[in-house]
Length: 368
Image (cartoon, rainbow, N blue to C red; front, top):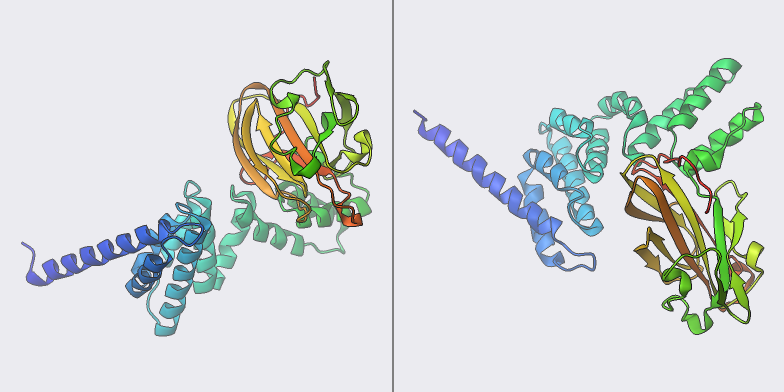
């Protein structure tokens, strides 16, 4: 039979848990444009007041809402840990570590778990980080890769080469990959960056079509209805046909200016096929500074009607499902009317990978 004290403690625990659940629900549902911010502010204070016992549930909620929601949760976690360290309250370190190690949890929660572990117990986090070298979350790999790079002792050439190759096999971030590629090449080791990243480099291109007044982005030109590589179409001022083009850029950039000529207020298309040995979840990651749209097997994935805002690798991550066998990737890329030197780029780069940024290589990769 439970004593009155046990009943009181149980009731208190249940009430705290209910309060945490309510707070997390309010935070997870906050919108991208700030919808729900007032309720979230109140919920955040209640969550922080719940203290360290709220951390496991908080980690479980990360990644289930918008990026804004995750920012609220991250701030709450940071504050709870900081307050606990000042007050010398015990933290559920073992539970946080267990959450981090369970790779089925959402990436946002696992990243937050590692960051909180670093904040709460740096020694423990340092001991765990090397084991993340093959982690399915790209952001968690980074520190482990850097530790491996930093471990190189240059006076031992053979060991250095082996360590750099091990790091290259694990690395997924562009800056670290560039460092490793440059370093290995200096000692005579070739590095195939397009293969490492999974860039698609062999395409057929078609254009130019019109983009006067930036209307080309929404105009449905023939490739959006059908892909016929033997067809000819009325383009901007001339008849246009598909032509093969292979990018030789190490980072897979397809420059339309090369096959189609320098032009403004134009639209072009690039199409390729990707042979997947299995049906699987994947990501198409695109970088580009022009307005663009992407289709996979005739299904529109995403587009961005924006020009010359800067370009970087993996700017856009498009989740998709590859089917077993041939997959058709179609990219539409528009160039606007600006004449400045920094607006001449009419290009994109696209790669196929998993959520960790690991290249998914085709069994064959040639346009048909």
